[in-house]
Length: 162
Image (cartoon, rainbow, N blue to C red):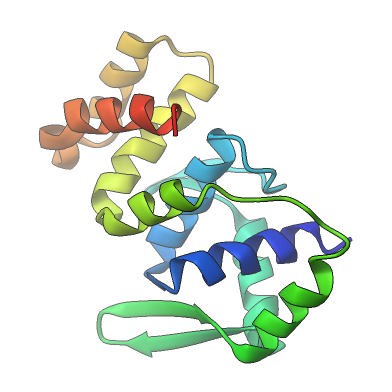
């Protein structure tokens, strides 16, 4: 029942701060692709894979004081609260799901634009494109990010081995 909340709280506990809604969406998508059991469904939108379910869950957690959502002229920053940590700790005995901490740290160091390209490439592979087809389609969808496609592909394949 609280699977998604527990996993998100674990993510925020490991990441400390996540800067930006787009970055959050891409991190959760890529963690899902890499094997974490996030239950969110993704559709392709302008900035790549997006889950309305994930945003609803985040909004719920903010409204119940489990996450702080700090708005600034640069966007949104998210951080787990003490209440969120308490709730996560209560769920620890019920859920044993782990999230790869090294992968969380690595993803959180990347820019949201880079993760947008990695996530788009991953989404296309998951949509039955082969590697070259996914690259070609990603370049078509994200021409403004063409300069990072090779690095994004390399990062994706490294990420799958974390």
